Image (cartoon, rainbow, N blue to C red):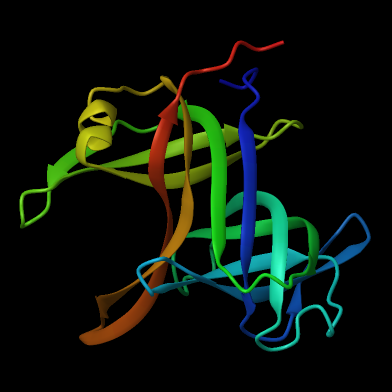
Length: 204
């Protein structure tokens, strides 16, 4: 798995939903996180966290439309607050956008690192949960939860740990409630909604 280089490319178009706030410093560069609201065709918005080295307030002005190109990243949250697996989008480029229309396109290839879990919704629709390890060029990997529906779910349910998977989809946010110390707490989960499975490309 370590020798396999995955693909990880995302293009988002949406509206800035908050001011950039400091996130972390890496190799002498300060990074900031800013929420981006990306509308779906259904009318529901995904609110995704963008990590950027460019906190330009004119770029991230409230409700400003922005086009972001980058990669989906994951890390383990050890603070005990919120989700254990944190999913963000690392911006490689961002620019103001005049087209006021949502876009959410993601291409991934990686290796399944957990056995797929196939199940059915209460209404009988097939669904399959996957965890895809997508290797970065320098030895680390991002672990990305994915979800497939219908015939794609049936196919993915027959896969196993170590199988390679190449897909197109979208990164989505989903709110849910969790019972903590007797209280209902609202949380947000991030996952990849699988739209298409693609043939695996030969490595050069």
